[in-house]
Image 1 (cartoon, rainbow, N blue to C red):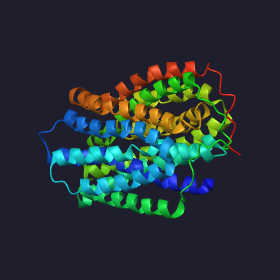
Image 2 (image 1 turned 45 degrees about the vertical axis):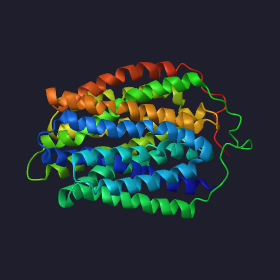
Image 3 (image 1 turned 60 degrees about the vertical axis):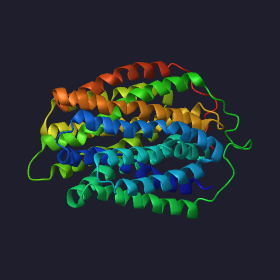
Image 4 (image 1 turned 120 degrees about the vertical axis):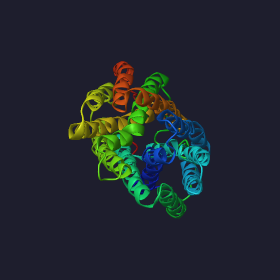
Length: 390
């Protein structure tokens, strides 16, 4: 299978995945108006259920990838998430919305271990191609609040789910058409067949992923609401929150490119801790600054935050057997997204008590343990067998 075809289908699938998942923080602004008696902590709890399922489904998603192959799992994700989004758009109650959001999280959670495994099995430049894959995620994160905020403000909160649901179903048809079925990737003749799993660096990577996931999810869930309250005026608050969040997430494209290049140029395990540490100053500034300066600090955070992803994913590939890689990617994403989802309810409680600006201060504090573990990872010898696939 050609690498460019793999990058194309995973680019589309990854972009749709993050667009759909990040609709909720923008839609939450509209739901808060529709249900004024519901607290931010309760809306945070709804988001937690959505994101916990999204994260935890990476575990069975990885297991299925190692047994069925990445192509089949990607097809299940696209068809299932597209159908779930269309069903969600038909609900007329908050309870129905919550149930539909949970179902959407289940199908979307299957994506990452399948997409990452497919790239790692065929890429001749793993970190750089993980960066390309990450650019798609950043584009999806940008498109979700941007297009979602516009559509929700003009046509109602259901419309964004209908649009992205249809896009997912179209992508499923394209997958069937352009990615042929083939044997599983972990056959004995594969160039990486001799690579063994090294658990010590993986455990360090997983711990870092948990704290990065908490800080990432807590920041993104309430960033649109914080922007909307800070810049209230003539522009619809849903649209304002979506526009400014899209600006921040668009800067993640620069981060993905930077991370891909750094990961191929420098020892990945040695630089990961410093990459995590680079997120802390901008989060601290976001909690204290206001107006345009706060937006500028958020843009800096958006760039530094996404440098992490291609490097972390490449480290998992470096230290995993080809027969277990889907499962091991599933563990990383399950912990990062699943445990990270708890930040939604924590952030909601913090916002109810001290305001949304306090959330960023809490998220910065959560990254301190990740930096410590990252520096410890830098002292672990790198895998001897981490050469690119020829």
